[in-house]
Image 1 (tube, rainbow, N blue to C red):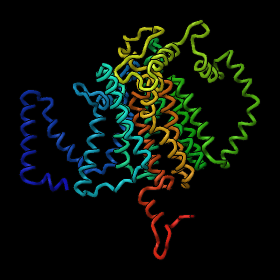
Image 2 (cartoon, rainbow, N blue to C red):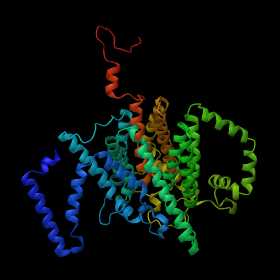
Image 3 (cartoon, rainbow, N blue to C red):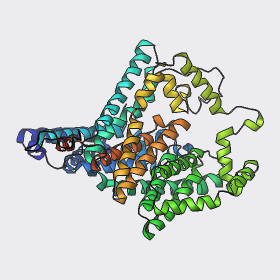
Length: 509
């Protein structure tokens, strides 16, 4: 036990002397920080006594709730009450690794120590399906290959390369931690509450910033919180909508109405078109994946009754995209571009053309990390706001093709189709409403993440990494619980040879 180890006289006296010396030193050189050694020791003692599940859920809740400081929330015009904890979690001055990295690695180390010492605080985790294990191993291997190919062989910039792959490398580590800490579908309810609470918190903060701070000053802002919060908002919508669809009770209906109203307010003030596009795709995927329940039949009948009106609505909204026709205007701006009427190409169209040209130069292996994409068509210079913009195309999918080629993209993207496969397969084999809703939410996160990668820089966003890692973990656990992907133990039971039998059980030959 760790308590027994720390209670040994030499160990205890050594640690006590270290704390005393650190405190005395800080009293002399930095009195304001003198409490840190004692406070840190007490905190570490408390952490070592907590279940891994409690600590991991706390890290997850903090990651999705606090301000994403690296992505400049509120366009730098306001620091919300969640700005300082966000700065601590994602950007620690003077440290190459943010606190979230240290927390994930530290908790994994605590998990390994407890298992090695036989400490029974945490229950044994469910096994991860082998295809997912292989996909999550291929991801860091591909990142390492692109680092060697881009930096060592092709002479790229190492400083920028780290930003290109850092958040993607964190995904398998987070999956390892989440899998060890969570109990499976039993924790879906807790995860849903955390996500919905985070959505409502950011929705109210975003509304406060726009209505009470930006507008009185006559300022126009492209977004309220951050671009990446679109993924969080749509995930929150998926949590309450799929919960109601799988268990259509009055309680779930009114909870869905209230939560959706708050989240749609946050999406409105955040003003990201991709949030609405992602939400529509989530509904479409959920519709086709789900079976023909009574609720699905009712909604289909309503849609069929309204279908004659939809073409007229789109036709009118295409020419006058305002007011109640605003959604049509949002779709139009994504399809034809905002500047097409002026005879100009959109920034994203120019950038996509340049990135595709970069990929065409080496379609198999790409350029590797640490390289810019080619500017065949010159882009407006935005280095004053984003110094390394030529290393990070807004379309992360095309960026992966440009930097990794077909080989690199396949390795970086493999875990997503595997996760989708497990989520859908487990959903159709689950019987409890909570499990089925969890499967659809996991699928929704994959849809949202891929959409955000295609429309924005989700591959370098902490929000995308945290949500997708949790979705992968939930899909994995649900697949094992529902026997959608049998664990090794279940497979041995199924194909074990019974007594007085000449052939394995289950063999139909």
